[in-house]
Image: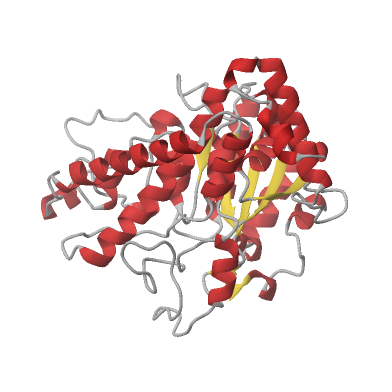
Length: 406
């Protein structure tokens, strides 16, 4: 089959049906040519196995996915450069660069606006900035929060590890390994008790497998048929140790399947594969079908925390990490994963499908880069927190009515 000829028939002007059929053909072709390979038995990565939901996305929605990936990417890169070059910058981050397709694909299937009792909720742990952006938080305010500015999302109290914006259903990050899935399952229980069709999503890294919360969450979610979607972002490393040191499974999803929970392993670098799996899980949860588990195979381009090993203006970190007291992963491994970059994959799909041409795709990236630059500039002009701010929200303020007991 002539791949280029197959792609040329698709254009925004040729109609939704033709575009949808060509997209279906693209996905089937990818599976047949091995671009999307099966990784483990009943949870193959072939798009035919996880559905063709992405083929029905409008061009505007597909461009939105691309823009979200770029927003996350340029937020991470800009913040890394700030940490490396600006001595007055106080922020820090567990960078999400390399994993953008996971948060983007999942959150694109959720309700992210509307009354709080109708939107879906997302819980995060480490690397929360990508999840927050994908869920729709105000990026300038997030930039201010990450730099401990008083006008940030959380008044400068939270910074990166405890970001929260309930207005869009981003309940927040948790600096500890393990609790977020348990808290998310509590929200899922509340949805079920209220007979709401909301869903709760928790993003957690492969390190969560080694925490007892992992198994208790899955057990309760299955027993109670909770509308919980557990997204395991397997970026191969628990901080500085390969996940295989603590996990006996090649696919952590095997552990979830053991509880009888529908489980998928997906290519976390491909936003459409993630979207397909998440859409299936969300639809199941809304219909009362209970929990789902998605393991996204992905990779982080920076080291565990901060920007050691990175250079300003360059993507990724290579070599020695003083926090790990070693170079804990081969540079070739990092560069090999960067050859399957989420930005490049998303751009190529949209160009192949005729949604964008290459020139417009490059223009969009320039627009996003400028937008993020402006967000950091705005944040840098905001007032810093003061020592007195530390006394706020500790005790109740104003008149507190007496309580009756007995």
